Amino acid sequence: MDRKHRFNFETQVIHEGYDAERFKGSLAPPIFQTSTFTFETAQQGEKRFSGEEEGYIYSRLGNPTVKMLEERMAVLEKGEAALAFGSGMAAVSAVLFALTKTGDHILCSQGVYGCTFGLLEMMEEKFQISHDFSAMESKQQLLDEIKPETACIYVETPINPTMKLVDLSMVAEAAKEKGIPVVVDNTFCSPYLQNPIELGCDIVIHSATKYIGGHGDVVAGLVIGSKEFLDKVSMTTQKDIGGIISPFDAWLLLRGLKTLAVRLDKHCDNAERLASYLLAHPKVEKVYFPGDSNNADFEIGQKQMRRPGGMISFTLKGDKETAQEFMNRLNLIKIAVSLGDAETLIQHPATMTHAVVPKGSREKMGIEDTLLRLSVGLESVEDIRDDLSQALEGV
Ligand SMILES: *Cc1c(COP(=O)(O)O)cnc(C)c1O
Image (cartoon, rainbow, N blue to C red; front, side, top):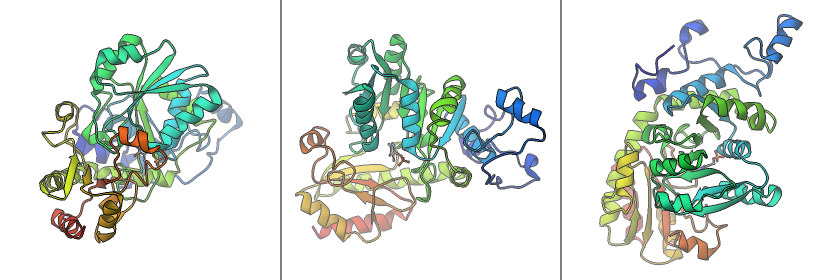
């Protein structure tokens, strides 16, 4: 089926990877809730194991429902192939362990997800795989920072929680000159807003827990890249470490993906209006939103993101207690980490997602005690704004 060149994104999220005719006309994809697959003969089993015959063996090595999800995601991220995992961190660790060996080095963007930071520390301690953080502000800076033992570049953009952007085509150019791959954690954008492979990067990771699932009911991860690299991952760090996704969770993601484009447009519409509201509010000090034309990275966003996304961070005038008091006064908006759900969520990075980062480093990263991160949901924008407004009035 060569649909990829015929249909647009909004159609691909619904149809790619699934053909009802092959499954008795079932409109919804079946859930293959099985651990293993039977062989008709001993010889067939032998051929499946040797690779002479294609087909399923055991669900850690492949499952038809999971395969549907992987095929859909490969098309959406414009890669050759995809692999699904039981969490975003299972995906991150499978990729980083596949790309590195003892003595190697990883060059990372200035901020990475908290548990990715923990994983990098663990890799250093246990396997002497080192890492450095780079502002990634120019190609020359990157070329200077790439060491002979640098095995890959690892980037998040927007960087959580200050929403700073990294120019992905610039990073890809520098990496190409040095012959090393670029890995992008594209969780904050989803494939609807940014496609790193099209910008010259090599491997894309998603915590599918966020926008891809979209309903706050599944923890999962995805990796998209070349078939050669993903075959290697599937036969090594996925098969032997085993962080696979369950068929039911893969099914939930196939279902979540169908509405990705319409959900993201609404997340973005709401975020744009709320960012303007916050920018004009006298009790709000700073607003970090890639769609703000005064934002230092506005041009990078225009170049590489379809829209500025559904995440806004902002600081309040006051101190940590002001921020916490503000959160406690919210009614509709829920206090929770995670993002990309239908519900608007707010969290306090200094005491929650980034509490493990020492205060000094936190401040260098722009994570002040009054910084709040808002994952704008799908509710009526007036209702979200009214909730922000009454809570701001009270502090
Ligand atoms: C949540 C998140 C992860 C980790 O994903 P899990 O599904 O929670 O394991 C990785 N990267 C980013 C940017 C995230 O937001």
